[in-house]
Length: 287
Length: 337
Image (cartoon, rainbow over all chains, first blue to last red; front, side, top):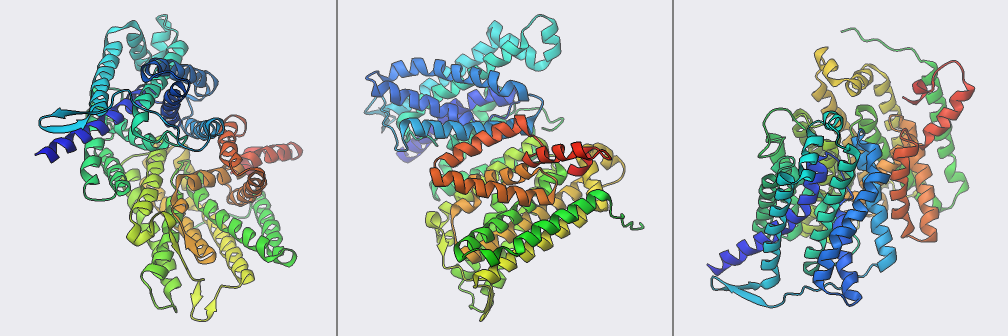
């Protein structure tokens, strides 16, 4: 019994991590349809923000507050310099953002060295839940994820910014003629996606090694999460993360972790052939 | 249907002349260099073969495969597993390995191509899925250590050959690779300039129209993808017999990235461009890495960004364009494709 609880809590931790990383991508890829292969590096930037803040004597909560701004600054800068010029050229976007990711990785490595940086969580110890003890930080992570995802959903549903983004994505020309500055909306949406990824980076950092290449681990998985779930819906991200994270935890019991990841990616790719628009997307048309 | 042989046009003549210069140039290399450089140039020609493989698909369909190292790696691993792991009798182990490696890669490519291309997956989405394929393959190679040797890979792959008759001599290996590269390049070129090449070009321009005219566009693309992967696997299998080992980065994302860079430098769609691109970039890589190995990934990144903005048709297209200024009889576009 306690095995089942631990396994499901582990699964929920992984699902939370995936949801956090994928929320940003759901905006950039799911809504804006930009294939940003540098998305993993936004996560890395968040993790390094935590490591730096702690190295300078700050604490975790300060980093958690700063990271979204760092991510937003990077994201909107990259949108203006690079992405903006490539909206009509998807393959060019893939190549340019892949190149950008390589450059960012090398710059981070040059600045901070190849060795993993220490990043610690503020919450230590374990909580006893239904008779089993579980690390408290992971429970905090799960809680934070729920809060962040709910927050995003609220922003998109109830704020003017959310309304603008939805309008621009549905019909850019019409939105523009109604007085919405579409270029600005795109810049802010891209920045918001990067900010979410950086926030995810801070929350993930205490659980993994903070190295320049850490982002690549999350890149392919988050793309699959977003496509499995269907473009641009919060519930889709949750469903996608649930499937990818759940299966991966389950398989990890039976085989090496790398093979489990490979198998899940393969299954995810196969799944998408039958539901090209995602589990929750409409059946018509294909991507 | 009656088969038409297209007469040689002047752009075909340019291509053949370029090929002759390139291959004669490569053929005299062993006269002038030592064993170490010979092995380096042999490896570069194998990578060029791999690049020709990618160019077959990307160049002719316009669909970018971001996971082509998977096929190179499967070819190499097929060879290594047949000779090292299965312990086939020394006589024909490497020949079985060549067959196993290329067959596995063709099957994989056919399977992936069948599901993706028949499923209507094109463009950017195909690119992402093949990128994941490269990740999956690399993780499998690392994780499935009882077969693949895990992180450290497999060592002790013998030279290609039967019994005593082996390509173990550096000069013999060099000319083997030279011959394969020449044969594959000529074969690819003559197929692509023929009827099938024209159909593929039509598919790139307007797939719906091609389908409406009665061509099975999915079938064309699947066959092309499989052929392209087979060439990549052939390069990989030969590479394993010459370096004597396989390792997980032979199916990884970095190699997938590099091969895109080789083809892109030469300008996609020109078989010769892929070869020249590989030579130019490999030379550049050695110079940059000799300053500091860490600079190379950074350079690759900057290259990709620069390419998208400055030379989307390849670095050599700049040369073509300058050349076209001096030729007034035809537009530069016809030379490139």
